[in-house]
Image 1 (cartoon, one colour):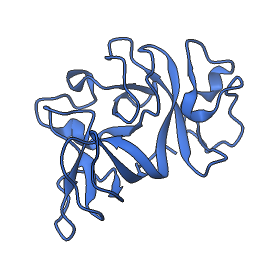
Image 2 (image 1 turned 180 degrees about the horizontal axis):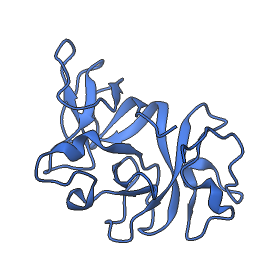
Image 3 (image 1 turned 180 degrees about the vertical axis):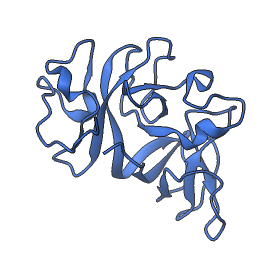
Amino acid sequence: MIPVRQQQVNLQGYKAATFNVATLYQPGDLGQTFDSSDGSTYTVVQIESGATAPAAGQLMYWKDKVAKTVTNVVANARLGATTNAWRNEVAGVCMLAATAGNYICLLVKGTGISVACVATPGVGDIAIADSVTNPGNVAPITVGTAPTYIPVGVFTTVSSSNKASVDVNVPTLS
């Protein structure tokens, strides 16, 4: 079944950026992509139980697109860690320190999003998933250079304290 874009997701009183629950009120919300009141777009996903507890601003990767599960453990990501193909499987940005096994709203589109980054990007550089050394981070590709992986977004500031502002635009399931 192809997911449809939905505007009515039951967040149980939470805001999308703070949604972190063990059970969905409406199981049909899993995999739904919706626009929030702040103009950002989110997809409801489940963090795999074997994931390391993600931090705010960390990239998450698809483990299973059908089951709508994500991970930050490269070895568990779709297409695995051996070929770096997992770098093309970015599901979105985790907006909070979440619990492995829980359901969250993963940011897939937003402006000026604080994303984990240990490199030094230039304003306007393309953001892609970083290497195995820093799998939850974005890395810069200099303006005018072809990206080597599917872009996560565009840097709008240089990094500070291992975070950088990115206009995020991750391909969605719907």
